[in-house]
Structures are given as C-alpha cells and as structure tokens.
Image (cartoon, rainbow, N blue to C red; front, top):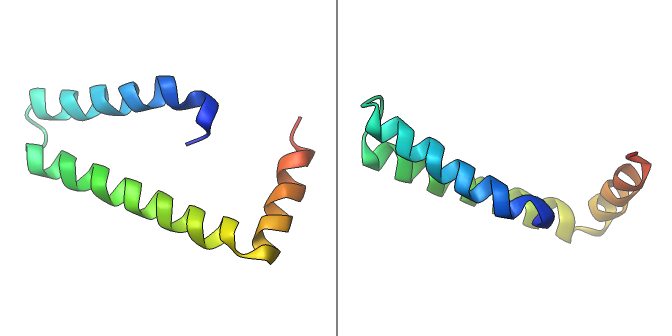
Length: 67
C-alpha cells in the first residue's frame, strides 16, 4: 500500500475481514489466509518489480507521469 494511505486502508481491511466473519460468509481461517496471501503477494511483487533495475526505472517513469 502507498505509505500515505496506510492509516485508512489497513483499518478498512480489518473491518472488511471482521464483517465477513460476523456475517457468517467466511470462517476466521478464511480471512486470515486471505490476509496472509494478500500481504505475501503484495510484498513479493513489490520486491520483484521494484528491486530489479529495469522495472524500477519504468515504474518511476509511469509514476512521474501521474497527475
């Protein structure tokens, strides 16, 4: 997650996970595995793309084009 949005997105992720369990649509284990997979995939992709020099340069070019 973009560092500036972490203060709102992490609590939102927690509330959505809690609501899934509270409403009975998922088990606690489902939510925990989903969180773990999400963090793992996000961290892995961040490491893979931003640590390699060609991708880092391209991402910075794209990022600087954003309004």
